[in-house]
Length: 426
Image 1: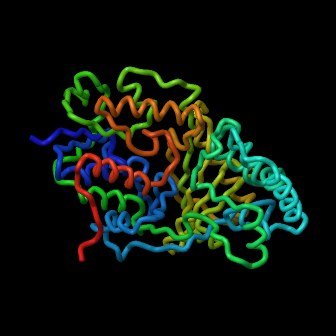
Image 2: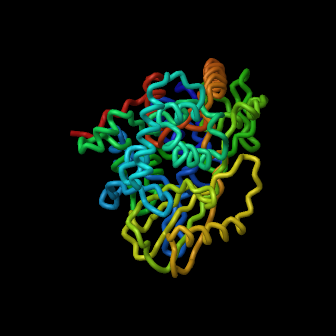
Image 3: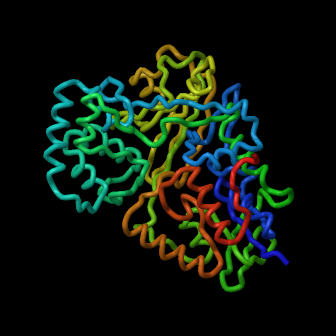
């Protein structure tokens, strides 16, 4: 008989795992909500298409894109060359900020160059994200954008974050490369210059993943409430389901709760993000796809323009507000602040709000630290030895992309002898 694999969580990680394993194992995918997708869900309201957050798809591996899109209507998939900027002191600077300081006023540019040159004469043995930023970029550039923005994003001090907390998602440039860019030589700016997006939003990608899974594998409204590691059983509603192996994509603190343990509150920390989806009666006045806002006086850290991606005639925004995990969210008051701050930033002028919705992502951005890395690695290793395999961004307590979650699922399937997707048919 085939081994029984329970997959707890119907987001991208769980769906990818089920798709790669279902031909070799007796898989059951359990999703507690009434629809699959996790944070990759889409709301259709008053003619607007809004995701739970800004989910755009940056594919580094062609086979992953083909796998996800194989059962999608590819005629509805847009390939977009990204326009993203930083709004800084009333001006727009191309993102990444550190690559484009030549767009700053000359006194600010010279200040950044002088501080960066002095900083990079020192050593590189950094113990925190803040130390790394000061050590690589100097005081001026750090305090203009890199530190205020990231502390606004994470809703915590960057002293608490690991120097490599964002991995490849924080594009670096050294002083020599920066001078080369200023002299007209090219320098790679970022990891995601091109992205794809479906006209029906992130849900189309979720449905594309689910199309690889045989009928009867997915169960919605099936919340796992307890995991017995010794007996390899899971409580799901009134049922007790046996498993040989389990894949779980729940946040690591929740996984520990399910096995009867408590996560150390000072180690596994994260923020939460309130996402406002806003629809207006007129189009955007600028072409940006998303803009970063480091200013402390404005409540949001990023604003994205769906209408500029989809070519719609009305402005359609996602607006992200970060808060500490224990903060009390007053959505009505924050919406008033968001609208006021959007006006101050010039995003809205005489636009009229005609539709809105919001969602709270909790956790949103995990605080990657040395202590968290060590704890997560040891805990995941212990669980795997008992047949439970945490999978995905929140289960592994890390920072990664949607595509990374699919790749992790594929690697696990290969290690278990499951199906290996090798690309489109010839």
